[in-house]
Length: 597
Ligand SMILES: Cc1cc2nc3c(=O)[nH]c(=O)nc-3n(C[C@H](O)[C@H](O)[C@H](O)COP(=O)(O)OP(=O)(O)OC[C@H]3O[C@@H](n4cnc5c(N)ncnc54)[C@H](O)[C@@H]3O)c2cc1C
Image (cartoon, rainbow, N blue to C red; front, top):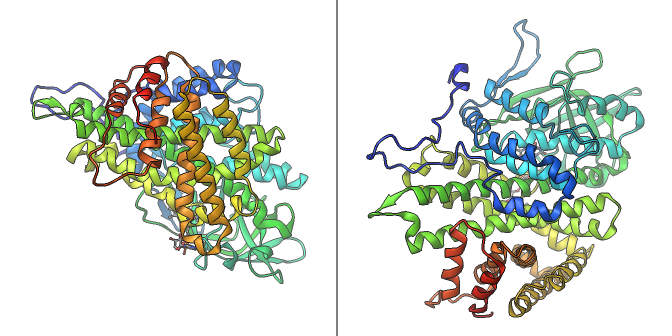
Protein backbone atom coordinates (compact mmCIF):
# COMPACT_ATOMS: atom_id res chain seq x y z
CA UNK A 1 0.00 0.00 0.00
CA UNK A 2 1.40 3.39 -0.91
CA UNK A 3 1.87 6.30 1.43
CA UNK A 4 -0.74 8.17 -0.56
CA UNK A 5 -3.26 5.62 0.56
CA UNK A 6 -2.96 6.98 4.09
CA UNK A 7 -5.12 9.78 2.81
CA UNK A 8 -7.96 7.48 1.83
CA UNK A 9 -8.00 4.15 3.53
CA UNK A 10 -11.37 2.46 3.53
CA UNK A 11 -14.65 3.38 1.95
CA UNK A 12 -16.77 5.52 4.25
CA UNK A 13 -19.89 4.17 5.92
CA UNK A 14 -21.95 5.51 3.05
CA UNK A 15 -25.32 3.99 2.32
CA UNK A 16 -25.40 1.16 -0.25
CA UNK A 17 -25.10 2.53 -3.76
CA UNK A 18 -27.90 0.51 -5.28
CA UNK A 19 -30.77 -1.70 -4.29
CA UNK A 20 -28.77 -4.76 -5.28
CA UNK A 21 -26.02 -3.81 -2.85
CA UNK A 22 -27.15 -5.82 0.13
CA UNK A 23 -24.08 -5.71 2.35
CA UNK A 24 -24.73 -4.35 5.81
CA UNK A 25 -22.92 -1.19 6.91
CA UNK A 26 -20.20 -1.33 9.54
CA UNK A 27 -19.34 1.12 12.31
CA UNK A 28 -16.69 3.11 10.54
CA UNK A 29 -17.58 6.78 10.57
CA UNK A 30 -19.53 6.57 13.84
CA UNK A 31 -18.54 8.40 17.01
CA UNK A 32 -17.68 5.58 19.44
CA UNK A 33 -18.23 7.78 22.47
CA UNK A 34 -21.55 9.18 21.32
CA UNK A 35 -23.00 5.72 20.67
CA UNK A 36 -21.76 4.22 23.95
CA UNK A 37 -24.63 4.64 26.40
CA UNK A 38 -23.01 2.27 28.89
CA UNK A 39 -19.72 4.14 29.08
CA UNK A 40 -21.40 7.53 29.36
CA UNK A 41 -23.69 6.30 32.11
CA UNK A 42 -20.84 4.81 34.14
CA UNK A 43 -18.60 7.83 33.77
CA UNK A 44 -21.38 9.70 35.52
CA UNK A 45 -20.98 7.34 38.46
CA UNK A 46 -17.21 7.12 38.62
CA UNK A 47 -15.85 10.50 37.52
CA UNK A 48 -15.91 13.69 39.48
CA UNK A 49 -18.55 15.87 37.72
CA UNK A 50 -16.20 18.80 37.10
CA UNK A 51 -13.49 16.55 35.63
CA UNK A 52 -16.08 14.78 33.55
CA UNK A 53 -17.48 18.02 32.18
CA UNK A 54 -14.01 19.18 31.29
CA UNK A 55 -13.09 15.91 29.58
CA UNK A 56 -16.38 15.37 27.73
CA UNK A 57 -15.28 17.21 24.55
CA UNK A 58 -12.04 15.19 24.54
CA UNK A 59 -13.98 11.93 24.87
CA UNK A 60 -16.18 13.13 22.00
CA UNK A 61 -13.15 13.95 19.89
CA UNK A 62 -11.46 10.63 20.56
CA UNK A 63 -14.75 8.82 19.94
CA UNK A 64 -14.93 10.45 16.51
CA UNK A 65 -11.29 9.61 15.77
CA UNK A 66 -11.71 6.00 16.89
CA UNK A 67 -14.58 5.49 14.50
CA UNK A 68 -12.97 7.65 11.81
CA UNK A 69 -9.36 8.49 11.10
CA UNK A 70 -7.88 6.07 13.64
CA UNK A 71 -9.99 3.26 12.25
CA UNK A 72 -8.70 3.98 8.75
CA UNK A 73 -5.09 4.19 9.89
CA UNK A 74 -5.39 1.00 11.93
CA UNK A 75 -6.54 -0.94 8.87
CA UNK A 76 -3.55 0.28 6.87
CA UNK A 77 -0.99 -0.26 9.62
CA UNK A 78 -2.27 -3.81 10.15
CA UNK A 79 -1.62 -4.61 6.50
CA UNK A 80 1.79 -2.89 6.49
CA UNK A 81 3.61 -4.29 9.52
CA UNK A 82 6.93 -2.90 10.71
CA UNK A 83 10.13 -3.99 8.97
CA UNK A 84 13.49 -4.51 10.69
CA UNK A 85 16.62 -3.15 9.05
CA UNK A 86 19.77 -4.67 10.50
CA UNK A 87 22.11 -1.84 9.49
CA UNK A 88 22.06 1.77 8.42
CA UNK A 89 23.11 2.78 4.91
CA UNK A 90 26.70 3.30 6.06
CA UNK A 91 26.85 -0.36 7.00
CA UNK A 92 26.90 0.30 10.72
CA UNK A 93 25.07 -2.11 13.03
CA UNK A 94 22.44 0.53 13.73
CA UNK A 95 19.39 -1.71 13.59
CA UNK A 96 16.19 0.20 13.12
CA UNK A 97 12.54 -0.50 12.49
CA UNK A 98 10.64 1.10 9.66
CA UNK A 99 6.96 1.84 10.31
CA UNK A 100 4.30 2.74 7.83
CA UNK A 101 3.27 6.42 7.96
CA UNK A 102 -0.16 5.28 9.13
CA UNK A 103 1.43 3.93 12.32
CA UNK A 104 3.37 7.14 12.79
CA UNK A 105 0.17 9.15 12.47
CA UNK A 106 -1.49 6.99 15.12
CA UNK A 107 1.52 7.59 17.39
CA UNK A 108 1.08 11.31 16.91
CA UNK A 109 -2.56 11.05 18.00
CA UNK A 110 -1.68 8.93 21.04
CA UNK A 111 1.58 10.42 22.30
CA UNK A 112 1.31 13.95 20.92
CA UNK A 113 -2.31 14.94 20.85
CA UNK A 114 -3.75 12.98 23.79
CA UNK A 115 -0.48 12.19 25.61
CA UNK A 116 -1.80 8.91 26.95
CA UNK A 117 1.61 8.02 28.38
CA UNK A 118 1.74 11.08 30.63
CA UNK A 119 -1.90 11.77 31.40
CA UNK A 120 -1.99 10.10 34.79
CA UNK A 121 1.52 11.22 35.83
CA UNK A 122 1.54 14.96 35.40
CA UNK A 123 -0.75 17.92 34.91
CA UNK A 124 -1.00 19.86 31.70
CA UNK A 125 -2.57 17.11 29.60
CA UNK A 126 -5.85 17.96 27.84
CA UNK A 127 -5.98 21.26 29.67
CA UNK A 128 -6.20 19.79 33.17
CA UNK A 129 -3.86 21.16 35.83
CA UNK A 130 -3.75 17.85 37.71
CA UNK A 131 -2.99 14.34 36.43
CA UNK A 132 -6.08 12.52 35.16
CA UNK A 133 -7.64 9.97 37.52
CA UNK A 134 -7.26 6.33 36.39
CA UNK A 135 -10.95 6.10 35.48
CA UNK A 136 -10.47 8.85 32.90
CA UNK A 137 -7.24 7.36 31.60
CA UNK A 138 -8.84 3.98 31.08
CA UNK A 139 -11.90 5.56 29.47
CA UNK A 140 -9.56 7.14 26.93
CA UNK A 141 -7.82 3.78 26.41
CA UNK A 142 -11.24 2.18 25.99
CA UNK A 143 -12.13 4.56 23.17
CA UNK A 144 -8.74 4.43 21.47
CA UNK A 145 -8.62 0.64 21.37
CA UNK A 146 -11.92 0.49 19.53
CA UNK A 147 -10.04 2.05 16.62
CA UNK A 148 -6.51 0.65 17.07
CA UNK A 149 -5.47 -2.23 19.30
CA UNK A 150 -1.77 -2.84 18.54
CA UNK A 151 -0.44 0.59 19.46
CA UNK A 152 -2.05 0.40 22.89
CA UNK A 153 0.84 -1.87 23.91
CA UNK A 154 3.54 0.83 23.42
CA UNK A 155 1.22 3.43 24.93
CA UNK A 156 0.47 1.39 28.02
CA UNK A 157 3.97 0.12 28.56
CA UNK A 158 5.37 3.66 28.38
CA UNK A 159 2.80 4.72 30.97
CA UNK A 160 3.65 1.81 33.27
CA UNK A 161 7.42 2.25 32.82
CA UNK A 162 7.07 5.85 33.98
CA UNK A 163 5.19 4.58 37.01
CA UNK A 164 7.97 2.16 37.92
CA UNK A 165 10.80 4.65 37.48
CA UNK A 166 8.93 7.34 39.40
CA UNK A 167 8.22 4.90 42.22
CA UNK A 168 11.51 3.04 42.56
CA UNK A 169 14.17 4.98 40.64
CA UNK A 170 16.94 6.94 42.37
CA UNK A 171 16.83 10.72 42.13
CA UNK A 172 19.54 10.60 39.47
CA UNK A 173 17.67 8.05 37.40
CA UNK A 174 14.46 10.00 37.64
CA UNK A 175 16.24 13.18 36.61
CA UNK A 176 17.77 11.35 33.64
CA UNK A 177 14.67 9.58 32.35
CA UNK A 178 11.45 11.15 33.53
CA UNK A 179 11.63 14.53 31.77
CA UNK A 180 12.15 12.65 28.51
CA UNK A 181 9.54 9.98 29.15
CA UNK A 182 6.94 12.53 30.21
CA UNK A 183 7.55 14.80 27.27
CA UNK A 184 4.55 15.81 25.20
CA UNK A 185 6.70 16.52 22.15
CA UNK A 186 7.18 13.59 19.81
CA UNK A 187 10.74 14.57 18.88
CA UNK A 188 11.96 14.68 22.47
CA UNK A 189 9.84 11.82 23.85
CA UNK A 190 11.49 8.65 25.16
CA UNK A 191 9.01 5.79 25.06
CA UNK A 192 9.25 2.78 27.34
CA UNK A 193 8.81 -0.95 27.25
CA UNK A 194 9.26 -4.07 29.36
CA UNK A 195 11.18 -7.23 28.46
CA UNK A 196 10.96 -10.26 30.73
CA UNK A 197 10.26 -13.35 28.70
CA UNK A 198 13.18 -15.49 27.59
CA UNK A 199 13.44 -18.79 25.77
CA UNK A 200 13.96 -20.42 29.16
CA UNK A 201 10.82 -18.96 30.69
CA UNK A 202 7.77 -16.80 30.21
CA UNK A 203 5.46 -17.97 32.97
CA UNK A 204 8.45 -19.24 34.92
CA UNK A 205 10.16 -15.88 35.36
CA UNK A 206 12.62 -17.33 37.88
CA UNK A 207 14.23 -19.30 35.05
CA UNK A 208 15.52 -16.10 33.42
CA UNK A 209 19.15 -16.43 32.31
CA UNK A 210 20.08 -12.83 31.47
CA UNK A 211 23.19 -11.91 33.42
CA UNK A 212 24.07 -8.49 34.89
CA UNK A 213 27.79 -7.77 35.29
CA UNK A 214 28.99 -4.81 37.37
CA UNK A 215 32.25 -3.66 35.83
CA UNK A 216 33.01 -1.18 38.58
CA UNK A 217 31.40 1.81 36.93
CA UNK A 218 28.31 0.55 35.15
CA UNK A 219 26.11 -2.50 34.91
CA UNK A 220 26.25 -4.44 31.66
CA UNK A 221 23.70 -7.01 30.50
CA UNK A 222 24.35 -10.24 28.62
CA UNK A 223 21.78 -12.71 27.30
CA UNK A 224 18.66 -12.79 25.14
CA UNK A 225 15.05 -11.71 25.47
CA UNK A 226 12.67 -13.77 23.40
CA UNK A 227 9.48 -11.65 23.33
CA UNK A 228 10.04 -7.90 23.18
CA UNK A 229 7.02 -5.86 22.22
CA UNK A 230 7.66 -2.25 21.28
CA UNK A 231 11.10 -3.60 20.48
CA UNK A 232 12.72 -0.28 19.57
CA UNK A 233 11.51 1.68 22.59
CA UNK A 234 13.90 4.28 23.97
CA UNK A 235 14.02 2.71 27.44
CA UNK A 236 13.39 -0.94 28.27
CA UNK A 237 12.76 -2.15 31.79
CA UNK A 238 14.04 -5.66 32.17
CA UNK A 239 14.96 -8.29 34.71
CA UNK A 240 18.46 -9.74 34.92
CA UNK A 241 20.42 -11.72 37.47
CA UNK A 242 23.45 -9.96 38.95
CA UNK A 243 26.43 -12.32 38.96
CA UNK A 244 26.43 -14.37 42.13
CA UNK A 245 22.80 -13.61 42.98
CA UNK A 246 20.41 -16.33 44.12
CA UNK A 247 18.52 -18.50 41.67
CA UNK A 248 14.79 -18.09 41.04
CA UNK A 249 12.89 -14.84 41.18
CA UNK A 250 14.64 -13.85 44.43
CA UNK A 251 17.91 -13.21 42.61
CA UNK A 252 16.49 -10.98 39.88
CA UNK A 253 17.20 -7.26 39.71
CA UNK A 254 15.34 -4.62 37.75
CA UNK A 255 17.19 -2.48 35.21
CA UNK A 256 16.37 0.37 32.85
CA UNK A 257 18.21 -0.03 29.56
CA UNK A 258 18.35 3.00 27.24
CA UNK A 259 18.42 2.46 23.51
CA UNK A 260 21.01 5.19 23.12
CA UNK A 261 23.80 6.13 25.48
CA UNK A 262 24.24 9.69 26.67
CA UNK A 263 26.86 10.36 23.98
CA UNK A 264 24.33 9.37 21.31
CA UNK A 265 25.82 5.97 20.47
CA UNK A 266 23.57 2.94 20.17
CA UNK A 267 23.59 0.79 23.32
CA UNK A 268 25.09 -2.69 22.96
CA UNK A 269 22.10 -4.83 22.12
CA UNK A 270 20.81 -6.06 18.81
CA UNK A 271 17.30 -6.59 17.54
CA UNK A 272 17.75 -10.01 16.03
CA UNK A 273 14.42 -10.34 14.26
CA UNK A 274 10.76 -9.37 14.40
CA UNK A 275 8.02 -11.91 15.03
CA UNK A 276 5.51 -12.77 12.33
CA UNK A 277 2.41 -12.50 14.55
CA UNK A 278 -1.21 -13.61 14.28
CA UNK A 279 -2.45 -10.24 15.54
CA UNK A 280 -1.24 -6.84 16.81
CA UNK A 281 0.55 -6.69 13.48
CA UNK A 282 0.84 -2.91 13.42
CA UNK A 283 3.20 -3.05 16.40
CA UNK A 284 6.70 -4.57 16.45
CA UNK A 285 7.45 -7.53 18.71
CA UNK A 286 10.95 -8.89 18.37
CA UNK A 287 13.86 -10.77 19.87
CA UNK A 288 16.94 -9.04 21.22
CA UNK A 289 20.47 -10.12 22.04
CA UNK A 290 22.18 -8.27 24.88
CA UNK A 291 25.89 -7.83 24.21
CA UNK A 292 27.04 -5.94 27.29
CA UNK A 293 24.31 -3.30 27.10
CA UNK A 294 24.62 -0.55 29.70
CA UNK A 295 21.67 -0.55 32.11
CA UNK A 296 20.77 1.43 35.21
CA UNK A 297 19.55 -0.40 38.31
CA UNK A 298 16.03 0.55 39.36
CA UNK A 299 15.30 0.51 43.09
CA UNK A 300 16.53 -2.25 45.36
CA UNK A 301 18.70 -4.78 43.50
CA UNK A 302 17.32 -7.58 45.66
CA UNK A 303 13.72 -6.71 44.96
CA UNK A 304 13.63 -6.67 41.18
CA UNK A 305 10.86 -9.16 40.61
CA UNK A 306 8.55 -7.63 43.21
CA UNK A 307 9.07 -4.18 41.72
CA UNK A 308 8.48 -5.46 38.22
CA UNK A 309 5.18 -6.93 39.38
CA UNK A 310 3.90 -3.37 39.81
CA UNK A 311 4.27 -2.88 36.10
CA UNK A 312 2.92 -6.32 35.30
CA UNK A 313 -0.21 -5.62 37.34
CA UNK A 314 -0.84 -2.25 35.72
CA UNK A 315 -0.40 -3.90 32.33
CA UNK A 316 -2.82 -6.64 33.30
CA UNK A 317 -5.41 -4.04 34.17
CA UNK A 318 -4.86 -2.32 30.85
CA UNK A 319 -5.29 -5.68 29.11
CA UNK A 320 -8.66 -5.99 30.80
CA UNK A 321 -9.56 -2.52 29.52
CA UNK A 322 -8.40 -3.44 26.03
CA UNK A 323 -10.50 -6.60 26.06
CA UNK A 324 -13.53 -4.63 27.26
CA UNK A 325 -12.96 -2.08 24.51
CA UNK A 326 -12.56 -4.64 21.79
CA UNK A 327 -15.72 -6.39 22.90
CA UNK A 328 -17.56 -3.07 22.61
CA UNK A 329 -16.33 -2.65 19.06
CA UNK A 330 -17.33 -6.24 18.29
CA UNK A 331 -20.78 -5.78 19.79
CA UNK A 332 -21.34 -2.54 17.88
CA UNK A 333 -20.24 -4.21 14.67
CA UNK A 334 -22.53 -7.16 15.30
CA UNK A 335 -25.55 -4.97 16.05
CA UNK A 336 -24.97 -2.87 12.96
CA UNK A 337 -24.52 -5.91 10.77
CA UNK A 338 -27.60 -7.66 12.15
CA UNK A 339 -29.77 -4.57 11.75
CA UNK A 340 -28.48 -3.81 8.26
CA UNK A 341 -28.54 -7.25 6.72
CA UNK A 342 -31.71 -8.83 5.35
CA UNK A 343 -32.27 -12.55 4.84
CA UNK A 344 -35.51 -14.36 3.97
CA UNK A 345 -37.23 -10.99 3.60
CA UNK A 346 -36.38 -9.51 6.99
CA UNK A 347 -33.48 -7.83 8.80
CA UNK A 348 -31.65 -10.71 10.47
CA UNK A 349 -31.85 -8.90 13.80
CA UNK A 350 -35.54 -9.87 13.92
CA UNK A 351 -34.88 -13.58 14.15
CA UNK A 352 -35.08 -15.11 17.63
CA UNK A 353 -31.87 -17.07 17.30
CA UNK A 354 -29.98 -13.99 16.17
CA UNK A 355 -31.41 -11.99 19.07
CA UNK A 356 -30.19 -14.61 21.51
CA UNK A 357 -26.79 -14.62 19.80
CA UNK A 358 -26.53 -10.84 20.09
CA UNK A 359 -27.45 -11.03 23.75
CA UNK A 360 -24.61 -13.49 24.29
CA UNK A 361 -22.27 -10.83 22.92
CA UNK A 362 -23.82 -7.98 24.89
CA UNK A 363 -23.66 -9.59 28.33
CA UNK A 364 -19.87 -10.15 28.52
CA UNK A 365 -19.25 -6.78 26.89
CA UNK A 366 -21.18 -4.91 29.56
CA UNK A 367 -19.79 -7.09 32.35
CA UNK A 368 -16.28 -6.15 31.31
CA UNK A 369 -17.08 -2.45 31.22
CA UNK A 370 -18.46 -2.56 34.76
CA UNK A 371 -15.48 -4.54 35.98
CA UNK A 372 -12.77 -2.33 34.50
CA UNK A 373 -14.29 0.89 35.79
CA UNK A 374 -14.76 -0.63 39.24
CA UNK A 375 -11.09 -1.67 39.19
CA UNK A 376 -10.01 1.76 37.92
CA UNK A 377 -11.93 3.34 40.78
CA UNK A 378 -10.11 1.06 43.23
CA UNK A 379 -6.82 2.16 41.66
CA UNK A 380 -7.76 5.80 42.24
CA UNK A 381 -8.62 5.16 45.87
CA UNK A 382 -5.55 2.98 46.44
CA UNK A 383 -3.42 5.80 45.03
CA UNK A 384 -5.00 8.12 47.59
CA UNK A 385 -3.84 5.78 50.37
CA UNK A 386 -6.80 3.45 50.97
CA UNK A 387 -5.52 0.05 52.13
CA UNK A 388 -8.93 -1.47 51.49
CA UNK A 389 -8.82 -0.27 47.87
CA UNK A 390 -5.30 -1.70 47.57
CA UNK A 391 -6.61 -5.12 48.58
CA UNK A 392 -9.53 -4.78 46.22
CA UNK A 393 -7.22 -3.90 43.36
CA UNK A 394 -4.93 -6.83 44.16
CA UNK A 395 -7.93 -9.05 43.61
CA UNK A 396 -9.64 -7.28 40.73
CA UNK A 397 -6.55 -6.96 38.52
CA UNK A 398 -6.04 -10.67 37.81
CA UNK A 399 -9.80 -11.22 37.87
CA UNK A 400 -10.43 -8.73 35.07
CA UNK A 401 -7.41 -9.81 33.02
CA UNK A 402 -8.37 -13.46 33.29
CA UNK A 403 -12.02 -13.39 32.30
CA UNK A 404 -12.37 -10.32 30.09
CA UNK A 405 -9.51 -11.48 27.86
CA UNK A 406 -11.04 -14.92 27.53
CA UNK A 407 -14.51 -13.51 26.80
CA UNK A 408 -13.01 -11.23 24.18
CA UNK A 409 -12.12 -14.19 21.97
CA UNK A 410 -15.66 -15.58 21.98
CA UNK A 411 -17.19 -12.15 21.44
CA UNK A 412 -14.87 -11.37 18.52
CA UNK A 413 -15.66 -14.69 16.89
CA UNK A 414 -19.37 -14.17 17.51
CA UNK A 415 -19.29 -10.70 15.92
CA UNK A 416 -17.52 -12.12 12.89
CA UNK A 417 -20.21 -14.75 12.49
CA UNK A 418 -23.02 -12.21 12.78
CA UNK A 419 -21.66 -10.46 9.69
CA UNK A 420 -21.72 -13.75 7.83
CA UNK A 421 -19.03 -14.58 5.27
CA UNK A 422 -17.96 -10.95 4.95
CA UNK A 423 -16.95 -11.03 8.59
CA UNK A 424 -14.13 -13.40 7.65
CA UNK A 425 -12.82 -11.14 4.90
CA UNK A 426 -9.94 -8.82 5.73
CA UNK A 427 -11.66 -5.76 4.24
CA UNK A 428 -13.96 -5.81 7.25
CA UNK A 429 -12.69 -5.05 10.71
CA UNK A 430 -14.09 -8.25 12.26
CA UNK A 431 -11.32 -10.38 10.74
CA UNK A 432 -8.65 -8.22 12.39
CA UNK A 433 -10.56 -8.20 15.68
CA UNK A 434 -10.60 -12.00 15.72
CA UNK A 435 -6.83 -12.06 15.15
CA UNK A 436 -6.09 -9.37 17.72
CA UNK A 437 -8.39 -10.82 20.37
CA UNK A 438 -6.23 -13.87 21.05
CA UNK A 439 -3.18 -12.11 22.41
CA UNK A 440 -5.01 -11.16 25.62
CA UNK A 441 -4.77 -14.69 26.99
CA UNK A 442 -1.01 -14.81 26.43
CA UNK A 443 0.90 -11.68 27.31
CA UNK A 444 1.35 -10.68 30.93
CA UNK A 445 0.36 -14.18 31.90
CA UNK A 446 -1.68 -16.98 30.37
CA UNK A 447 -5.10 -17.86 31.76
CA UNK A 448 -3.66 -20.61 33.94
CA UNK A 449 -1.00 -18.37 35.43
CA UNK A 450 -3.47 -15.59 36.13
CA UNK A 451 -6.02 -17.96 37.69
CA UNK A 452 -3.30 -19.44 39.91
CA UNK A 453 -2.26 -15.95 41.00
CA UNK A 454 -5.86 -15.03 41.74
CA UNK A 455 -6.95 -18.10 43.64
CA UNK A 456 -3.61 -19.29 45.04
CA UNK A 457 -2.17 -15.96 46.10
CA UNK A 458 -4.77 -13.15 46.07
CA UNK A 459 -7.36 -15.37 47.79
CA UNK A 460 -5.19 -18.04 49.46
CA UNK A 461 -2.35 -15.94 50.80
CA UNK A 462 -3.50 -12.31 50.90
CA UNK A 463 -7.24 -12.86 51.49
CA UNK A 464 -7.81 -9.90 49.17
CA UNK A 465 -11.30 -11.23 48.36
CA UNK A 466 -12.46 -10.12 51.81
CA UNK A 467 -12.26 -6.50 50.67
CA UNK A 468 -14.33 -7.41 47.62
CA UNK A 469 -17.00 -9.22 49.64
CA UNK A 470 -17.30 -6.24 51.96
CA UNK A 471 -17.51 -3.69 49.17
CA UNK A 472 -20.06 -5.65 47.16
CA UNK A 473 -22.24 -6.20 50.20
CA UNK A 474 -22.28 -2.44 50.68
CA UNK A 475 -23.19 -1.97 47.03
CA UNK A 476 -26.07 -4.38 47.34
CA UNK A 477 -27.28 -2.83 50.56
CA UNK A 478 -27.19 0.62 48.96
CA UNK A 479 -29.10 -0.40 45.85
CA UNK A 480 -32.66 0.08 47.02
CA UNK A 481 -34.23 -0.30 43.58
CA UNK A 482 -32.99 -3.86 43.07
CA UNK A 483 -35.99 -6.18 43.52
CA UNK A 484 -35.65 -8.15 46.74
CA UNK A 485 -35.60 -11.59 45.10
CA UNK A 486 -32.92 -10.53 42.65
CA UNK A 487 -30.88 -9.06 45.49
CA UNK A 488 -31.19 -12.32 47.38
CA UNK A 489 -30.00 -14.30 44.34
CA UNK A 490 -27.07 -11.95 43.85
CA UNK A 491 -26.06 -12.32 47.48
CA UNK A 492 -26.29 -16.11 47.22
CA UNK A 493 -24.21 -16.18 44.01
CA UNK A 494 -21.58 -14.01 45.62
CA UNK A 495 -21.41 -16.14 48.77
CA UNK A 496 -21.15 -19.35 46.80
CA UNK A 497 -18.47 -18.02 44.47
CA UNK A 498 -16.41 -16.80 47.41
CA UNK A 499 -16.92 -20.12 49.16
CA UNK A 500 -15.71 -21.98 46.06
CA UNK A 501 -12.63 -19.75 45.73
CA UNK A 502 -11.72 -20.24 49.40
CA UNK A 503 -12.17 -23.97 49.14
CA UNK A 504 -9.99 -24.21 46.02
CA UNK A 505 -7.38 -21.94 47.62
CA UNK A 506 -7.29 -24.10 50.77
CA UNK A 507 -7.04 -27.48 49.13
CA UNK A 508 -3.92 -28.15 47.01
CA UNK A 509 -5.79 -31.08 45.42
CA UNK A 510 -8.27 -28.60 43.89
CA UNK A 511 -5.81 -26.47 41.92
CA UNK A 512 -7.34 -27.64 38.65
CA UNK A 513 -10.53 -25.80 39.63
CA UNK A 514 -8.81 -22.41 39.83
CA UNK A 515 -10.16 -21.20 36.50
CA UNK A 516 -13.67 -22.32 37.35
CA UNK A 517 -13.48 -20.46 40.67
CA UNK A 518 -12.11 -17.34 38.98
CA UNK A 519 -14.90 -17.37 36.41
CA UNK A 520 -17.54 -17.72 39.12
CA UNK A 521 -16.09 -14.78 41.06
CA UNK A 522 -15.98 -12.62 37.95
CA UNK A 523 -19.57 -13.37 37.06
CA UNK A 524 -20.92 -12.88 40.58
CA UNK A 525 -18.98 -9.63 41.02
CA UNK A 526 -20.08 -8.19 37.71
CA UNK A 527 -23.71 -9.19 38.34
CA UNK A 528 -23.69 -7.21 41.58
CA UNK A 529 -22.03 -4.22 39.95
CA UNK A 530 -24.50 -4.22 37.06
CA UNK A 531 -27.42 -4.36 39.48
CA UNK A 532 -26.07 -1.48 41.50
CA UNK A 533 -25.37 0.59 38.40
CA UNK A 534 -28.74 -0.31 36.94
CA UNK A 535 -30.74 1.35 39.69
CA UNK A 536 -28.85 4.64 39.84
CA UNK A 537 -30.77 6.30 37.03
CA UNK A 538 -34.59 5.94 37.14
CA UNK A 539 -34.72 6.70 33.42
CA UNK A 540 -32.32 4.01 32.27
CA UNK A 541 -32.08 0.67 34.05
CA UNK A 542 -30.70 -1.44 31.23
CA UNK A 543 -27.86 -2.62 33.44
CA UNK A 544 -30.32 -4.07 35.94
CA UNK A 545 -31.66 -6.33 33.21
CA UNK A 546 -28.11 -7.27 32.26
CA UNK A 547 -27.40 -8.19 35.85
CA UNK A 548 -30.23 -10.72 35.73
CA UNK A 549 -28.89 -12.03 32.41
CA UNK A 550 -25.52 -12.70 34.03
CA UNK A 551 -27.19 -14.75 36.75
CA UNK A 552 -29.38 -16.62 34.30
CA UNK A 553 -26.73 -17.34 31.67
CA UNK A 554 -23.44 -17.45 33.49
CA UNK A 555 -24.19 -18.58 37.01
CA UNK A 556 -27.42 -20.57 37.10
CA UNK A 557 -27.46 -24.34 36.79
CA UNK A 558 -28.68 -25.08 33.32
CA UNK A 559 -30.20 -28.29 32.07
CA UNK A 560 -29.02 -28.88 28.48
CA UNK A 561 -32.18 -30.89 27.81
CA UNK A 562 -34.71 -28.36 29.12
CA UNK A 563 -36.88 -26.12 26.91
CA UNK A 564 -36.79 -23.35 29.41
CA UNK A 565 -36.39 -19.87 27.97
CA UNK A 566 -38.64 -17.74 30.08
CA UNK A 567 -40.93 -14.97 28.94
CA UNK A 568 -39.10 -12.38 31.08
CA UNK A 569 -35.97 -13.15 29.17
CA UNK A 570 -37.55 -12.49 25.81
CA UNK A 571 -38.90 -9.19 27.13
CA UNK A 572 -35.48 -8.27 28.46
CA UNK A 573 -33.81 -9.09 25.15
CA UNK A 574 -36.36 -6.99 23.26
CA UNK A 575 -35.74 -4.04 25.56
CA UNK A 576 -31.98 -4.35 25.45
CA UNK A 577 -31.83 -4.68 21.67
CA UNK A 578 -34.15 -1.72 21.12
CA UNK A 579 -31.23 0.60 21.87
CA UNK A 580 -33.55 2.82 23.93
CA UNK A 581 -33.28 3.64 27.65
CA UNK A 582 -35.39 1.34 29.85
CA UNK A 583 -37.16 3.06 32.78
CA UNK A 584 -36.37 1.48 36.14
CA UNK A 585 -40.01 0.66 36.80
CA UNK A 586 -40.20 -1.28 33.56
CA UNK A 587 -37.01 -3.20 34.30
CA UNK A 588 -38.30 -4.02 37.77
CA UNK A 589 -41.56 -5.28 36.34
CA UNK A 590 -39.72 -7.53 33.84
CA UNK A 591 -37.63 -8.96 36.66
CA UNK A 592 -40.69 -9.60 38.77
CA UNK A 593 -41.71 -12.19 36.17
CA UNK A 594 -38.30 -13.83 36.34
CA UNK A 595 -38.17 -17.27 37.92
CA UNK A 596 -35.78 -16.89 40.80
CA UNK A 597 -32.79 -19.13 41.02
C1 LIG B 1 2.84 -11.17 20.61
C2 LIG B 1 3.50 -11.34 21.92
C3 LIG B 1 4.14 -10.28 22.50
C4 LIG B 1 4.78 -10.42 23.72
N1 LIG B 1 5.44 -9.35 24.25
C5 LIG B 1 6.15 -9.51 25.40
C6 LIG B 1 6.92 -8.43 25.94
O1 LIG B 1 6.96 -7.34 25.41
N2 LIG B 1 7.62 -8.63 27.07
C7 LIG B 1 7.62 -9.84 27.70
O2 LIG B 1 8.28 -9.97 28.71
N3 LIG B 1 6.90 -10.89 27.21
C8 LIG B 1 6.17 -10.74 26.09
N4 LIG B 1 5.44 -11.79 25.58
C9 LIG B 1 5.57 -13.10 26.21
C10 LIG B 1 4.37 -13.59 26.99
O3 LIG B 1 4.22 -12.83 28.16
C11 LIG B 1 4.62 -15.06 27.26
O4 LIG B 1 4.53 -15.75 26.02
C12 LIG B 1 3.65 -15.65 28.25
O5 LIG B 1 3.88 -15.12 29.53
C13 LIG B 1 3.75 -17.18 28.32
O6 LIG B 1 5.06 -17.60 28.49
P1 LIG B 1 5.68 -18.72 27.54
O7 LIG B 1 5.43 -18.28 26.14
O8 LIG B 1 7.08 -18.96 27.94
O9 LIG B 1 4.80 -19.98 27.81
P2 LIG B 1 5.07 -21.07 28.94
O10 LIG B 1 5.38 -20.38 30.21
O11 LIG B 1 6.07 -22.03 28.42
O12 LIG B 1 3.66 -21.74 29.05
C14 LIG B 1 3.22 -22.80 28.18
C15 LIG B 1 1.87 -23.29 28.68
O13 LIG B 1 2.02 -23.86 29.97
C16 LIG B 1 1.06 -23.32 30.86
N5 LIG B 1 1.63 -23.30 32.22
C17 LIG B 1 2.82 -22.83 32.64
N6 LIG B 1 2.95 -22.99 33.95
C18 LIG B 1 1.81 -23.58 34.40
C19 LIG B 1 1.33 -24.00 35.67
N7 LIG B 1 2.05 -23.83 36.79
N8 LIG B 1 0.10 -24.57 35.74
C20 LIG B 1 -0.66 -24.76 34.64
N9 LIG B 1 -0.24 -24.37 33.42
C21 LIG B 1 0.97 -23.78 33.29
C22 LIG B 1 0.76 -21.93 30.34
O14 LIG B 1 -0.53 -21.50 30.78
C23 LIG B 1 0.84 -22.17 28.83
O15 LIG B 1 -0.41 -22.60 28.37
C24 LIG B 1 4.76 -11.66 24.37
C25 LIG B 1 4.08 -12.74 23.79
C26 LIG B 1 3.47 -12.59 22.59
C27 LIG B 1 2.78 -13.77 21.98
